[in-house]
Image (cartoon, rainbow, N blue to C red; front, top):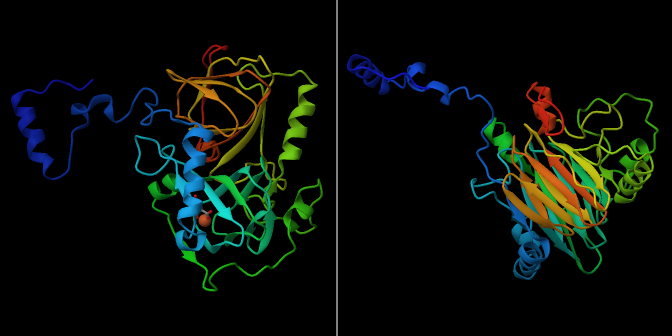
Length: 347
Ligand code: GTQ
Ligand code: FE2
């Protein structure tokens, strides 16, 4: 706690105020807290009720070319931009015949695909056709555009490290001069063929982000389903895997950690918290999430935020599959990642 000030000490403090100097003993533990105090609440969006009607309305109201990106940003009520203090979460839609023009930025992006078929994201000229449940990577500073040649609308979730990169003062972006798409430079799904089959090119991979841009849901789902047979459930996570860079085994992006998780029907996790702030989307199934003092009912494509250092717990009413992303990848690099499990003594 702050030390009580006598008159002389108060006058001393006041004289320094205009020089932007503060004695540490007057602010006490405000500067160095005993443990993290999350600055954001948890928040939840019901996909069918809160999100889908608006993104479909946006699809009628504005073209992808006009909007540049037809994106609705899901904000934490405590923040101007961002679902957490480090990550954004947004919903994007593209319609048949549209192109969302090519650009690049120092922020990294991921997509969790929600509904529709036939749209692609192109990363550095390589088209990746998207399917519901897929996890698609747009590493920082890669040229990317989206397009759809077939009729109908396609919708997905975007996760970017915008608040983190802004906070660090490292934001850059560029529009591609050619207007529209970046030239196709490789066959569709080229990165998957080279890096996604347990095979690797002979030349070493030099970039830090994953050279593979697509993690198809079918593979994710099969991996989780096969693990179920091992009956090796984690009390806090059920069955949880991280998406990995196939060349290094590290996180897919230097700043964003991404996960897939299966909880079998009836499973209830032990409470858990960590220093990472997480955004979670239901890919499949039904359940409940309790985050701090709030409980959410989860259906397909519902989204919720778990603030840093906040106890959370999951319950599966049906086999429940969750996709999630967090700032753990950057916290680990800074030796700032910690976790606590309610079912174990504190470490
Ligand atoms: O699709 O490239 O939600 O650049 C925010 C910024 C999506 C994108 C967002 C972006 C994109
Ligand atoms: Fe972008």
